[in-house]
Image 1 (cartoon, one colour):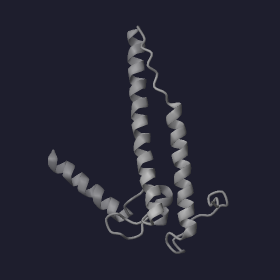
Image 2 (cartoon, helix red, strand yellow):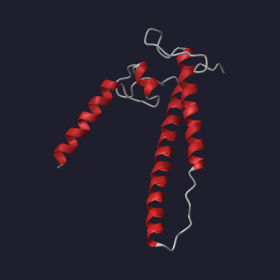
Image 3 (tube, rainbow, N blue to C red):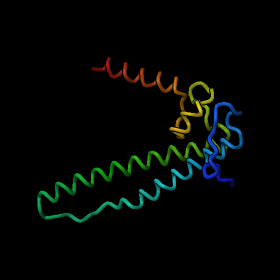
Image 4 (cartoon, rainbow, N blue to C red):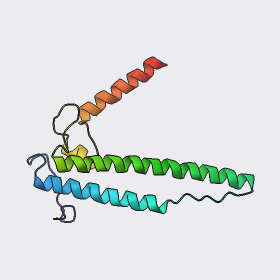
Length: 136
């Protein structure tokens, strides 16, 4: 596999969308991100030692909750990365799940697991915001 990120290649909106170079670039970017998350997840071992001191127990509980939330975030990101890698394999990566149109290359570079175009994401967030406002 050619290492697109290491040779300084940057996808551009001025080239054919999801050409071989772009697919290689995003596959490498997603794979590297996935590997770093797995490494981070392995470093975060949840300590099961319970302290007799109440303050230590409270600190342990707070630390445990932070580690648990971090593990959940990592698991969610790993699932999204795996979905993106699967889409790369089937040729649907980079296309908006709502409109079928290409997602902006700049958006994919900033958020390689993006599944919606910027316009579709903004519509979704506006709908969610309006739904929350009407509920309360």
